[in-house]
Image (tube, rainbow, N blue to C red; front, side, top):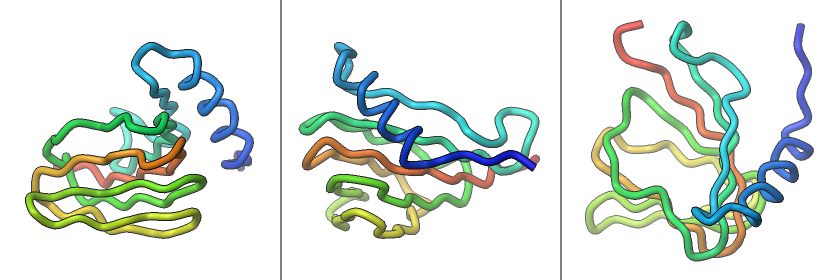
Length: 111
């Protein structure tokens, strides 16, 4: 069994994002190309975003710290610390309202 502190990983990635020109950092903590489920901790600096993209499968987002917006077309959902959002299966983006960290879980299609 592996154990991981999401708070510690989020702090580490928030620090990396603060030093990155792109203003973001991420680390896959479970899964990957060989697994059906993938979990990635993501850090975004305030005002940065993950540009609109298709979801590769069913996905959820758990806000660890900060505030963000999940945007799909004209629909927007706000997420705050410990909010859990189900990502719609349509093109979407994630915008950081403040420095933000979150856990992205994706069930990859066809695995």
